[in-house]
Length: 126
Image (cartoon, rainbow, N blue to C red; front, side, top):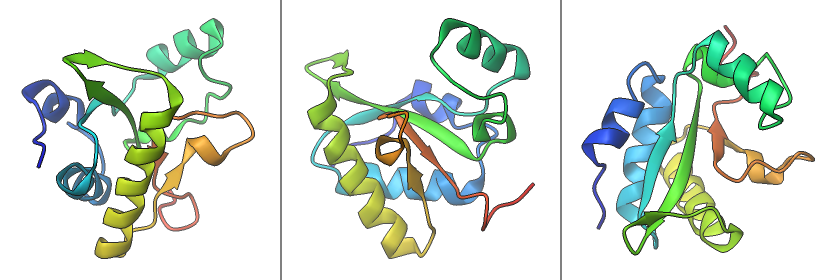
């Protein structure tokens, strides 16, 4: 069983409590350790990511605390290769189902975003 690091906990500050609950449970059931690389995001940070091509929208759920980016932490390093993201997604799906909190994964989008998990607009409007 894995545990959130101090940095991951800090990165969850300002994130909606339902999403935090899913992340916490997912880490406990996950086959792979992971960390929270980003949660709540400023508009300035979002503009930087769009300019760099790392995001395609200024309407990000990160800005409102309804999204997190998670990354595998393997061998003491954060990794961005795809196979571990599927394991994180499976853990997030299991946790969201157990808690009855719907979560969307960016890895299923046309613009693939493996680290991204968000609460859906339909159930969590602003």
